[in-house]
Length: 86
Image 1: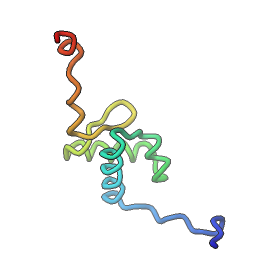
Image 2 (image 1 turned 180 degrees about the vertical axis):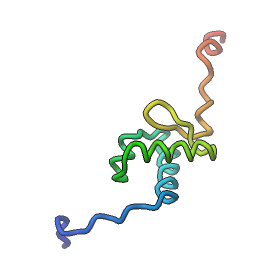
Image 3 (image 1 turned 60 degrees about the vertical axis):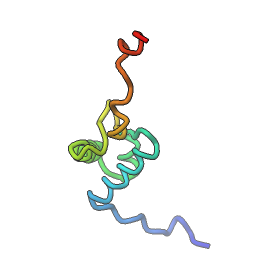
């Protein structure tokens, strides 16, 4: 049995590794939050916002208030005015 108090923390991820994990998490969960990601990866919220901006430029995620959603589902929801027409 290992003593968790003496285990070394995992080394920080490279930016590309962190962004790959963020993209995967976004696809799996349907949405990610900046604060949660910052805590998970032990980085600042500004770092996560930069990661999300990079991922948005590559059309992987679309930034939304406080987080991001997968790119392909971001435009799926029709406008309220169109939904009410039917």
